[in-house]
Image (cartoon, rainbow, N blue to C red):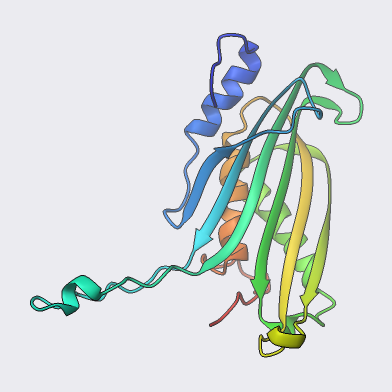
Length: 208
């Protein structure tokens, strides 16, 4: 969120809310280039959730100490959070702000034939926003299942199933902190990290 001297005050308030948003330690958020054609003003954040790796004490003595390489953490989910702002308002958004999001995670292969997979992912979004008090309207999105199969020299690789959720909504005020917190919770949910509310099904994440 670079130079801000030229930004409208309402958008500055929104940026301040994003900076103070709480999130779990497992999720890494960083600013990424924002789209330039969707709105006069925009900011984008990228997210990654990695599986925690156990800490193994290194040998106290000998050459093995210098050869010990910690294992690479496994990526469980990725996402993007984009906040758009048009001071003149947008009839399409029905407001001056619009939030556009994307989440992707790899799941267990046997989840690919579950007809409820998309509806479960959408339920997570709706409940996360409601639970965080992120007031919004004009919500829309798509959930997509992606099957990856390998052939030829890669035929030994196991098939994988990914779930993608693309969603957008219009926040009712410039207080978007709760919206980022709700979305961050969603990314962690896709990664299989947090406990789920009662009555919501669980989508198992990738297993090694």
